[in-house]
Image 1 (cartoon, helix red, strand yellow):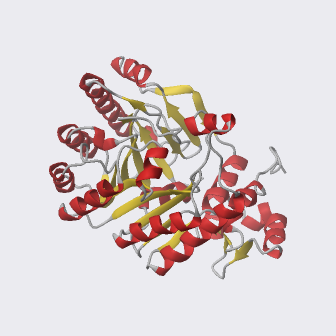
Image 2 (cartoon, rainbow, N blue to C red):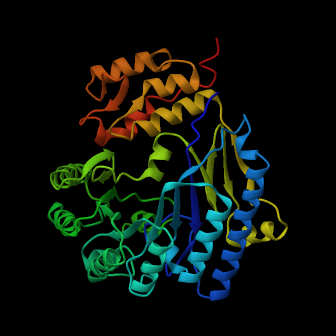
Length: 405
């Protein structure tokens, strides 16, 4: 099976000053510099080991997909800017040494907009080192709600960080926003959108709050301490975001993401277009061809494995995906995009057309007004389908063995 050669790299920095009340990511609060330094050393060893694997052709095996140049590098977390400038620059240098990045590769850094971890000097050094996209975890432009969700910055910090980033030469900045916070009104959400848009970012991500298992918010919800906003209010908030952000010149290109033309997240498009990515760091996930795996967590286990010069893959997470599973995932991920799923690309990868596999489902959902066919042979969610995407996605789950002839 052919596989596109474009790929991305995700690097997980698991440290935060404290964990937000809604967060279910693999992160921890590091209080000692030695803890961070030890992790960076282990991460560099993993990068070196993968460089050796690439030289040996592991990522180019027919089973795993074709290796090629990497078009994106994404440092996420956690809070990557928890690391100091020298640690971040060292990581970037080693990554460039061992992975072939395209000359125009998108290099993104997630950052918390607080004055301690995001200084003008650090921003300037990172920009000079080739970081060309910044993603600021703003979340909400209201100090009360920032405290209520466990963030350690305020609105003034967000605006100051944005100005500093512009001054350092960043011309591609994303703001992450969360809506449907407990007690939040539509009017309050509108104020957040307006203040975010006033900064004129190139990209905006707007996610509704999810009460994830294992988070403080999920526990408080079970205890009756917080309540989710009503579904109809959440839907109105989503529609408001779509209308306001689009009117400000940012095109909606994914269910929750908006960008000025040419500023779509190249890294996230790899996920949504079901291409390859390699995850580095404790707890990071990878997808390559028909394989999926995750690294060991917590960092102590990850670091111990690397001391033995062994890739820190958690063998219990390794999967070899079936054709059915890959078809499902390509369609479900692709339907998140406003452009939808390419019938031509689906047929190229799997040797069968969308209609051969999903014809009845597509016809039914088109008839109900949730899906549309395009002249280019794509299927995509309609405006009616976007808010209920998860229910639509479930319609594309295949029964195991259903493709057996």
